[in-house]
Length: 219
Ligand SMILES: CSCCC(=O)C(=O)COP(=O)(O)O
Ligand SMILES: [Zn+2]
Image (cartoon, rainbow, N blue to C red; front, side, top):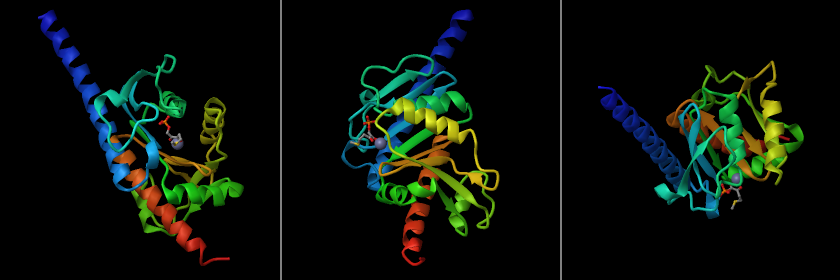
C-alpha cells in the first residue's frame, strides 16, 4: 500500500511539471503570435508547486519553445546554468507572493514605447477604460489602476530589489495592477493561474495601446 501511494505521489509531481512546462510553451507561442516577443525577447514561467517553477532558458525563441528550452528552477537555490538573464525578476516575485502562479514578460511595441514616455511619471495610471475590469480586483471603469514604471537596468539583482521595494508600497489611492513596466524594455505581468496571467498580459498590452493613442490627442 505504501508503495502504491508513493508511486502515485511521484506521478502527480511529474504531471505537475508537465502541466507547467506545457503552460510556458503555450504562453510563449501566444505572445509570439501577437508580435510581443521579437528576436528571442521575453521570458515565461509557471509555478509547479510551492518551491519550484518552470521557466524559459536564456536566448531561445519564445514562440517556438520545446520542453528542453525550459528549466525546472527551485526557488530556494541558485539560478541554474542557462537561466534567463531576467530569471531573478521571476524567482523573487514567486518567493514573496505565494499566490502568484505564472509570470509572463513581453517586449511589445506599446509597452516598450509607453514605458519610455512615462518614466518621468514613475507610474502609468489608467482610469476610464472598460477593459480595466479584466484586471483582478478592478470592478469599474472609474477605478484608478497604477502600473509602476522602473528605469531599465542590466544589473538584474539591483533592479529586482527596486521592484520588490516599490511593489511592497502601492499607492493608497489606486489599485495596483498585476504587472509593471521597464522603461524602453517591456512589461512583466502575472496572475494566480496561467489563464489569469495571460488575460492580464493581454489586457495591459491593450490598455498600453489605448493610452498611447489617447496621449496623441491630449496636450
Ligand atoms: C533579446 S532581448 C534582451 C534580453 C531580454 O530582455 C529578454 O527578455 C530575454 O532574455 P532571456 O535571457 O530570458 O532570453
Ligand atoms: Zn526582457
